[in-house]
Amino acid sequence: MKKIEAFLKSHRLDNVLLALHRVEGLTGVTVTDARGIGRGKNVRRDPNDLHQIARIETFCTDDMVDAVTDAIMKAAHTGLHGDGKIYVIPVEEAVRIASGERGESAV
Image (cartoon, rainbow, N blue to C red; front, side, top):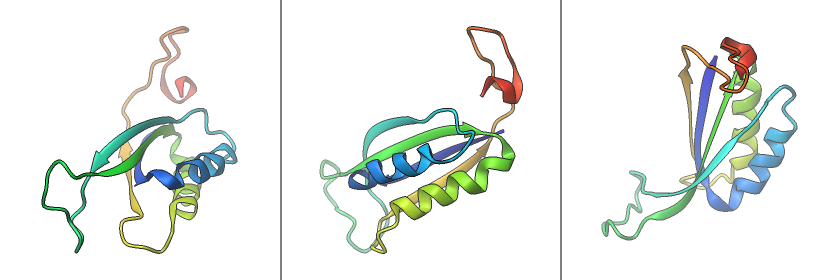
């Protein structure tokens, strides 16, 4: 199992969610509004002047990672600096609280 965490421009969020909706087998997505800065040429020096970004988190089986990351990448891409980042993180265990299911079936 993997956790996929993506940080992207807020105005691309709707496109990314539509693309993820088309990924067969993906069971859910969490979106958080966030603010941040990168390390690019135009980094703002004022710590109170942060960019609005969207943070997307989802969990999937190992065989779905490429489909999910490709969907995010294609939908978030503008070709401009600062399109975002995607991180893929291993997950040791998942437990569905309501049923007690464990492992991939809990995702």
